[in-house]
Length: 240
Picture 1: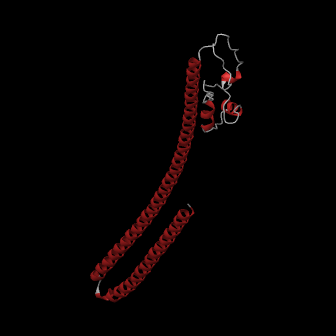
Picture 2: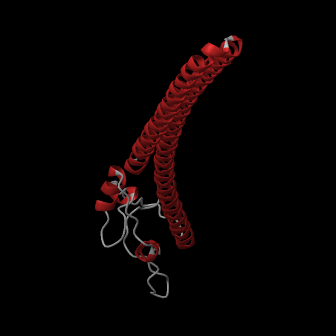
Picture 3: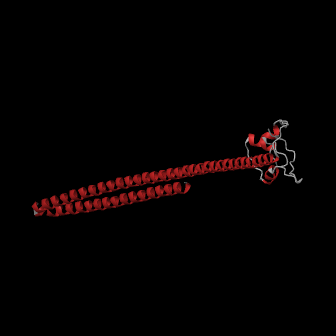
């Protein structure tokens, strides 16, 4: 049985061969983690040397049957190498844990960033679609208004054509009656015809004038509505 105490060991020539665990522990860089267990372990370090389990245990008294010096030296070197490898493995494990935690946080941040960007893109696409729908609606309303006005103009033109044909038929009938009348009545009929023609021309002129005014009013009303709709659409476009 060998002792676990840390008393220095000397060779036969008197040179100190204390285990090299102190040198290994002093040269190793300290590692700091947020984990409570690791922090507790770090708090137990003394002068850069972690308090190993074998130092916290009670020392086992050395037996009277001590082994040879060569066996003690070999065992001490083996313990130093084993402890050094254990510390390196622990340090490597802590480093890997830190790297894994860093990559995990980085991945979470990247996912959050991608989600935020996706939400912004979806909101902008929805706004664009709403603007398209609004523009399409306004365009359909303008086209419907134009169709109604064109239909109204066509109705007025057709009414004017009917009135013109009616008046022309009346004139033709009057001419025919005048031709069949006697010469005694010719002057009277010509006078009546002249008056009728003058009246019809005046009515025709009035109708044409009224028709022109109606068309002008319709065109002006149409232009006003179109300008108003265009202004409202431009205002809505600028506000969005």
